[in-house]
Structures are given as C-alpha cells and as structure tokens.
Amino acid sequence: MRVPSDFIEYLKATMRDGVVERLVSGLEQEPSVSIRLNPAFGLHPEIPGAEPVPWCNGGWYLAERPVFTADPLFHAGTYYVQEASSMFIDHVVRTLAAITDRPFRRCLDLCAAPGGKTTLLRSVVPPDCLLISNEPIRARAQVLAENVAKWGQPNMLVSQAYPADFAPFVNTFDLILADVPCSGEGMMRKEAEAVAQWSKALVADCAARQRNIISDIWPTLRPGGFLIYSTCTFNHEEDEDNVEWIARELGGEVIAIPTKPEWNIDGDLRSEDSTQSAGSLPCCHFLPGTARGEGFFCAAIRKNENEDSVIINNEDSIIINNVREASRSKKDKRSRGELKLTDRLNLLPTDQLDSPDSPSVEFSLEDAFSYLRGESLVLEPSVPRGIVQVCYRGRRLGLMKNIGNRANNLYPKAWRIHSTHIQPKTILG
Image 1 (cartoon, rainbow, N blue to C red):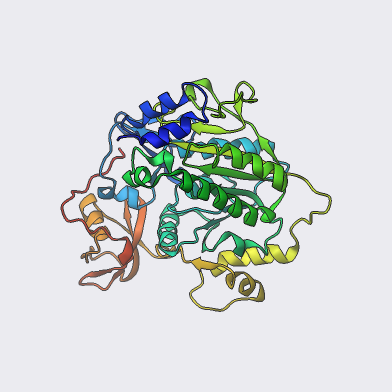
Image 2: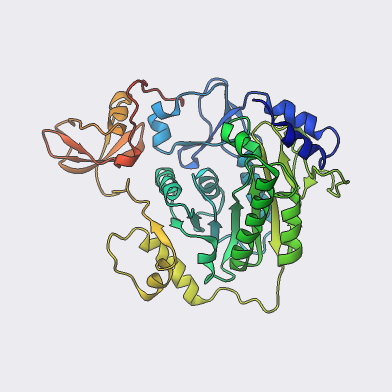
C-alpha cells in the first residue's frame, strides 16, 4: 500500500524520532494471519507451521491464509479468526483479574461486533461471570449474535443499544471493554477504505466521539472497576490524550500492564519523554512491522473509589439475572425486572443452534459442508425422527428436522454458505 503523505507528516509532528519510519515500513509489509481457539475444544491444534501468539492463551499464527469459509470447524465455533494484536486483551484481563479486589461478575463489551474480543473475554473471565456483548448498529449486532451463538459459551447476552441506554445501571459492571470507533489507521495495510477516508478532521471527530462514549458509560462502572480502552489507530488524540482525559476528568488511575521485550510493544509514542517504567506500559501500542500484528492501542483505567458510591443493589441483580433468561425467551412473558431492562435494550437471540435434549448425528466433511450451504440431506434409518443436532468431529453445527425420507435443514438462512466454487477443507488436524 502507499501511505498518504499528509498522514506521515501528521505523525512526524507528534511522534518520537524513528517511530514513523518503523511504522511506514511495517505498513508496507504483508500482514500476518492468526486464529484463536475456543477453550471448550482444546488449545493445542495440529496445524503445520502454526506458532503461538505469545500474549494470548490459545492464539496461533498461521503460515498462510486458508479459505476459512470452507472449514466446518470454523462455522462450529472451534476457533475464531482474530487479528493477533487485539488478542492482547487476553493478557490485559488476566493482569487486571490478579489485582482486583473482587472477581469479575458482570462485564460489558460496549462495542463488541463482530465478536473477536467478546468471545475472547468470555474465554478469560470466570465461567459464572455475566458478559453483555453490545453493538448499537443492527446489522453489525446480527453478526455479533451469530458469532456468540457459534462460540457456544454460557452467560452471554447480546444487546443492541447505545451507550446512553445503559444509564440505569449505575455502578454495575466490574469490567468494561470499550473498543471505540476510531479513524482506523491501524487497518491501513488491510483496508483501502482506511487509507482513503483518513484526514485530520476525521481524527478530531473520532477523538471527540470517543470521549462522549466513555462519558456515557463511565457511571455504569463500579468504583474500583476497570475500563479497557482500545482503538485500532496510532495518533495521540484518540489514544494517549483520551486516556489521560478519562483519568483526569472522570476520575481514574491508569494501570501499567507488564510486557516482555520480545513482544516488541511500544509505549507512549509522543515526542515528549515517556514516564513508563521498565517492563510495564501504561499505554500499549502495536505497530505493524515491529509487533507481530496490525495496529492496535489499549490502556486500562481503574475507576476511583468514592465514599458516596452505592454498590449495586438487589433489584439490579434481579434485573441482570432475568436478562439472561429474556434473551432466550420466545414469548413476551416478562417479569417486572425483565420489562424494565428490555424496554431499554434490544436483546438479540443467541440460541438458534440450541436443542440440548435432541439426539445428535455425526456428518462427514462433505455432508457438513452441504449442511452449511442449506441443503436437505437423507439421514441413516437409525436416526430418530424429529429435531436432531448436526455435528462434525463432535462439534455442533446446528439443527435438522428428520422426517424420515429426508431431513429439513434448520441452519439459519442468513448464516449459510453461498459460494459454489470452494471445496470443503479443515485446517485443524
């Protein structure tokens, strides 16, 4: 790709010597390919040439990019195709869990689509922790719900709401991940649109929007709770400046995250001297060509304790517990607690693959691929009639209704494979 000259000049005016040169060189290199395994299915695959992502348990670099759509195990949620830099959230959450005054019980992923970071969060927070995965844009929220359903982990809820819609939940969340909308500089070598849309005005608009988002959601973070603020951009206005603004204006402490030299993660990129301590970084930058991944920034901020703060009450607990049931409900039969929340948040179903009491049938690679394309299949005579679960290598793909002479395909139409020219192939041994 050709890096825009005005973008280079903008960065040179604010970054330390040598950073821009490294960054431009990295943007001209080919990006890496990486996946993250679902811990429910094991974390050590047999993939030729695969190398572990050092900051993420279950993250793997691949030697080449396969056709993921051709792999039924991808559709089954056995792994997620995720950019390696953003997997650093795994290390950040584990660091915060080690220093918190109480375990994470309620977490919010505020801008969760398409689902990479939210399925990662589900894999690293305690099993009994409720994770609300939110996306305000409906089309993106539908994709998020699909990926959450395929990941297949409990205690997850998908909502479609704006940050201000969470206003009733004061002091509720132990952890909030805000991967805020940004100018997208970190995606320039992968997306031509990120190059074409960049401007100083866009940076300024994004920085202001990010502050508004955090201002809206900050009251829902409990005192002593953590905000993980992240972007896929490099500039200080959206990154370091906003982190400092959050801590100063909203009341928080930036938490330094321990790193290892061989990870090649940069700290504060601004021209002034950084106050970061050796071995830990209050602000973490992943620069393409330096760290092995795309452009990514994150920082963790702990909300100040406050004598006037009120810890979540019993009514709120009932509301949140009911939300989990409401998200699976097919009818509009809600308790008063459910009504209070679901009138605020548009909840998306994530149970379209579920029928836990139904018998299962194991498919071959070819039949599994045919199923994912929405085709009807004839099952063995020994398979009971009615709803059956379709599996490939023990991983659930979805449902069929066996009526004897054939089985009707119940795989959601919006999720089906439409390509007719790819051949089925799995990347996992």
